[in-house]
Image (cartoon, rainbow, N blue to C red; front, side):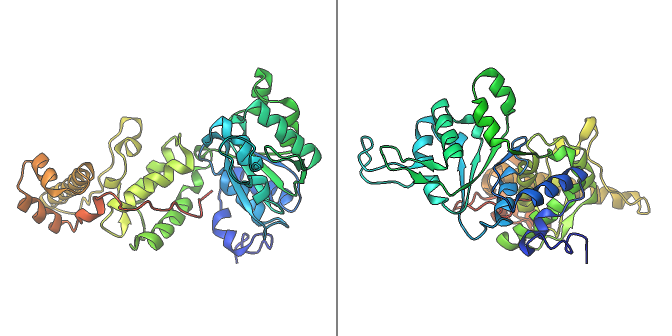
Length: 351
């Protein structure tokens, strides 16, 4: 039994999520274990894409409110004029078009947890109302007069330095003090590259379940290159890159040819070609040619979204010749066609 599995704090469904080889992430998880059982307001800080939403869910799942709702509001994705009504709801007749009462996120989160992402984007007037809720534990719907008890634990997140925003005068200092009772700084992916292999394993497992493939791993050279990359988009960028490679891959191992060249070619070096010096030169040439052809065909189909006639025209060959090459390399044109329906994102975002 691993040290993680012997830790009785974590729920079984969280064990895959909290696996980490990073000392920085271990510190984050220790803080989470301390604060989760309390009602304390938590402020999650970090760059976009580091996994603040997943940490917020972990806090909720390991609190005494875990059986109650977890409600998420992305403040930066909602027009400023609508944030207040989204948070607090409104009464019928509160404004033109308010034909019936609408429950806000505070209503929906009663007894549970309300997660406010990008709280740094809310307007000064909404900041005042949120401060009142934190101080008095009551709120009012827009157009309403009856105070409503707010039995809600609040977790907020920001990708900006709130203390700096306070200095600029764009964020209330008294609200900042209320929100930052228990701040947790999340490391960027480039600060915890040792976790990249297990994050990829979790993503492959999720994609196998939802795309009905059987990918079993990833080329070790690719892992080495991914660890050297700077990851400006953090875990979210890694998810997107692995998903694209997964869709393109026709074997059981994610290969270098399906990853962006700018990631594999760090510091101006080209991606390595794995060669066997024990083979005759003619065989090495044949294998190298096949690798280049396979990568070219996949990029060609990706560019034309699986349309063989357009791809053949670009390649300067007939559709019959292209079909023969696709058969030779077991490449399915259907894998490159755009999806007909919107697909769901991985439900268990890796930390």
